[in-house]
Length: 265
Image 1: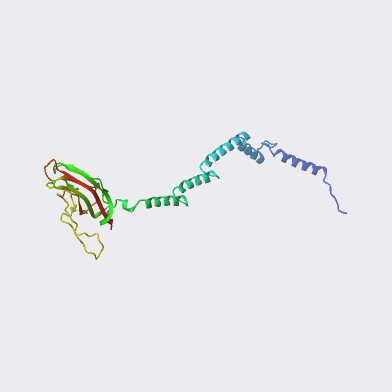
Image 2 (image 1 turned 30 degrees about the vertical axis):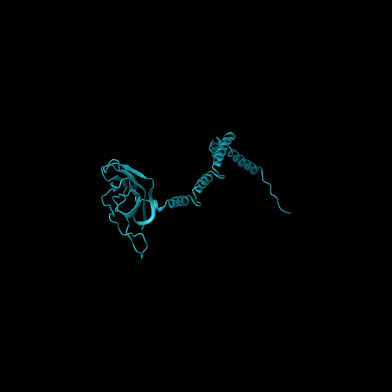
């Protein structure tokens, strides 16, 4: 038969004292000796952290969060605030034609915008050669009455390269004794074919011819078409003026259909 040993009275009292000592150290600021205990410090920290966490205050925090969430939803977002902002940027970028990351969208947007701008419209110093490709046109009829000191501006344009351009226009006068004068400016460094240059706008191995007419004047009472090659050494605005060639105030000069042709080389 197993032997059972019962604690004596002294041992029971010792256990009771230990339990009482532990009880005094749980949930209080100090123990029976007046010393602050670890359990007391933990309770102080808890009370400090939760002092402002009342149900009323937490309800207000939830209300603010819900408000932000509802505002973000107006941007087309449905998840966290950060994700909503990300989605918003994505949707806006998508309207620009982009489909990937923000940096890629911006890069794609810039590329797409640049591709939409025709290279022919970029004012850079490229070489241009005469051709049949129309670049600038001034169709309306213009007229001037008076002597050669009375000029009228009939066209102005900026060539998109340096080299040579083909220029054509129609001109006439109301009196065969009157000369119609056409004048390009600026003159410095520019040259115009006054006797008719070789027409080089055809294909290689074809027979060239010479443009008809002259640049500076015409006495025709009917419209004649003048074709000339303008040499352009630098990019600058070019102005075309017309004037009468004599002092008779009743003489009138006319021009129309001023066209400038060139290709990029």
